[in-house]
Length: 500
Image 1 (cartoon, rainbow, N blue to C red):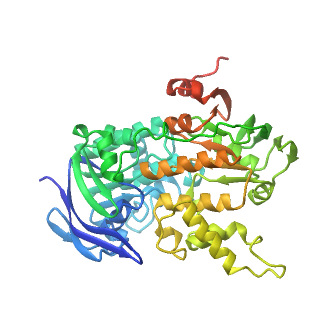
Image 2: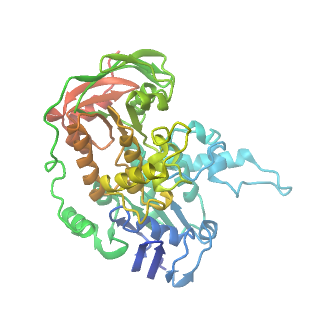
Image 3: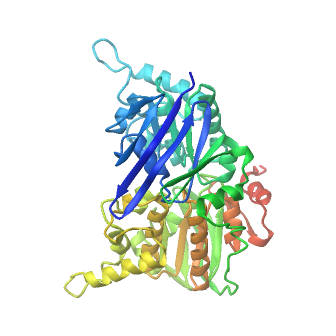
């Protein structure tokens, strides 16, 4: 019998926000259904209603005709529903096998855990995924990409799996890892599972999905057949307007100034010696495969990782950053790739996150913080960066991923940096919000900032950058002007093997 998941008149309210408004549609087994919509459209909220994180204020959902009301994600898992979120839900100190079989580790009749058997079972799944990792390796020692794959393997391992939902699963994966994931999704589809796939990457939606459910402002718009619907039509349905060629519309800075930042032979325990220059008003792109060393060189520059060799000059003056705080005081700010672990402060409000780096500037000689200054800074950040929030006092974790990202950028820009480093700034962000981010980046450059853009999306790095540095194997493998760059050139610079 074909599995069917039905949402009937689901609504969910938060203070000042109607997150879901009378959602009604069905998802079927043996199909991959994409959820497509801008950040804040309700996609992740609906997944959290489905798996018991949120209780709906109205409506119900049925699995194979049976009404379900889960009070927790664990209840949903026991009924065969798993959700893989952007933010990883794994235990870093445990091994790969222990994470996969957490709470269901094999044991003998005396309750003694059989680790060897767990490793053997995990190895079979690892081989299904085609990954070069060991079941006994601690998850903390894996790359972010492999940590994500461990979480997917955990859901894949459950015998009762009926529904599996992926929320931006490829944001940290390389092309080869994406191929492995898609092969697994095809297996799940062939087994008749209901597969829901949330992504903003249209090429992935085209490649892996059968149908697309489109959302806008908390409402379900329609479900369309992927192969029969034009990409522009999908985007128009989700944003309410035709974006056209986003990059062609950008008003990029045409007046690039003198050298602002000079990096000479900078290395750390995680990256080989790297040298480059950044000019005032320039957007300098960094391209390369996951693990090429792009993030690592930036962490060395700002003092997040100790420099082993090299020197950094800002406006011709040598600077030494022993910490990100010192780098910020020197005029260099990094907006990190991992929002959850390195960006947001989850127990603070929107205002608190924007102001956290400005406590010294907002305090008097006695160290008393001015509430008036903080309120103005938060209001300016919300307005200037178009952060969708009903109030500055709303907890940042209750915002969509795109709006959380805007808060982090607003915080960094509020410190008045000379160099702004953006590490995968549009990761997990919808097409409409990307357009806003692109306009902001161009505006930063026109204001004279030097912008370093790390991006795994080749059209993005080509469309926004003035010049592109390509990294491979923890060092620079080439440099090219953006106007001369093509996807083929960038890929070949980042992938070809060096001759001995």
